[in-house]
Amino acid sequence: MFTKKTLLAPAIAATLLSTMMIATPAAAKSVRVSHADLNLGTVEGQAVLQQRIDGAIRRICRFDDQGKLNNPYIERACTRDIRANINPRIAAIIENNRLGG
Image 1 (cartoon, rainbow, N blue to C red):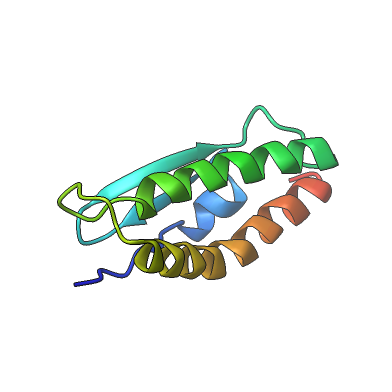
Image 2 (cartoon, one colour):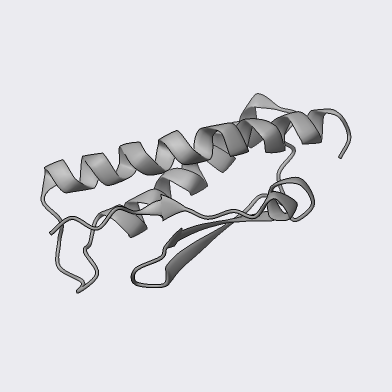
């Protein structure tokens, strides 16, 4: 059965801290994505952040809660769900950085 994976990032983490957390509630599996060392005001910094997020999403979606490889349909659905949740948060972090926060 497909367990929906979601992104958990408290609002304070999105605006004040230098990491985001991508987590799966059912398995309590999480992946931290740091951006403290990046200049998100540049295209290059944003690209590196996106690469880190892509890697975190792969680690979450590639395997099920028992560690078995998910089929491609489940992996794509998981990736799509996480991206739908995380994209507004990424935009907010980048905008906050642009504004000097």
